[in-house]
Image (tube, rainbow, N blue to C red):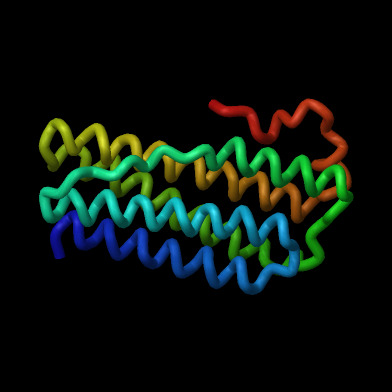
Length: 159
C-alpha cells in the first residue's frame, strides 16, 4: 500500500471512529465536537486523495479550535455536563490514533516532494490539535466541576 492509500485509510478509520463515538455520547456538545473531528478527517482524506491522483489540493483549514471553544463555553453557561464517563478510554484511544497519525505524517513528509512535504506537516499539526481537543474532552469528562470553573480557559489556548 502506498503512502497516500495508507493515509486515506487512516483518515477514513478516524472519521468512522469519531462518528461512532458521537453516536454513543449523550452530550450534545460533545457530539458536535466529535462530529467536527470526523469532518476534519474527511478533509484530510480528500487532501490525500487529491495528492495521490495529482488533483488540486483542497484547503484543510478549519476553525475547529475556535468552534470547540464556543461549544465548551456554551456547555459551561448551560451547566451541561457529560454523563457518560466510561467513554474516557475511547477518547484516550482516539488520542493514541491522532498521535500515530501525526508521527506517520511527519515521518513520511521526508519521502514526498517538497510541495507535498508542507501539506504532510500541516496535517500532522492538525492531528496535534485534534489530540489537544481530545485532552480537553478527557479533562472535561473527568473533572467537569473544576474544569468548568476555570474562568481563564487555559485549557483551550492555542499553542
